Length: 286
Image (cartoon, rainbow, N blue to C red; front, side):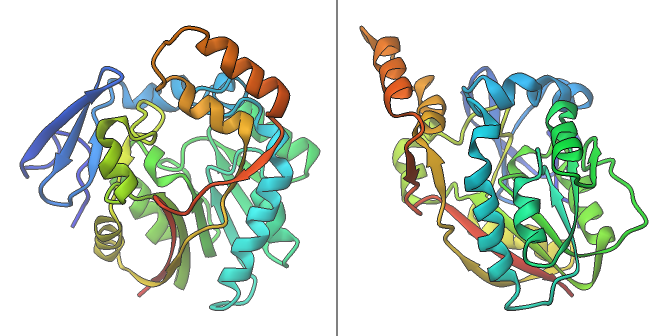
């Protein structure tokens, strides 16, 4: 059973929920996934995940490289979770950017590989961190390697073809291989309260949204069972947090000055993101 990707590749009924940033947000009655109708799937990655995404804020990062310590610790934390279920082997980090999370896994004994669509940020990881990173989309990624763990930290919402991505995950996973997913929960009370103004409804950057139920159902259809889940100890710089919410704040008087002052004065302050609408899941191939 395949996941639908648009209005034209699935016979199940779709419902238009609302328009966000000019993109129709649809819900599929078959899989309960919500998705944005993107205009040009073939050019989606290059248009959205350009250098501006990693260095100019908005729905991306004000400066991705400044968060290296946070992301390295993130990799360490997830490696500790996974080691309860398997010993270190080969890990594939999907949407790895510069590879700071990969370095966290490496420090715990994993042999790491990465896939990243942005060439500039991937080159940093290859040249500065000496990592094995393939530049391109995961939907078209091909390798002879099989992986004991595939990590997708805040990635599943970005796939332009969910069906191809999940088929590739299944094909690249070792027998009883694990898949680690961190994803936003569209059924969380925060998401319900804010409705279409929830910060994760941010196409064209994020184009897929799941509830916990629909995410588990999706992986089950591709041969994976959930074996654990929890809330991440998610940290973020204040500068990054401000960049994510600025465009959703009404253009009140002095808005830009206020945001600039907070970013310049306290931007490097690291804050904890409350675990209210984001969760991690660990799946095993069966």
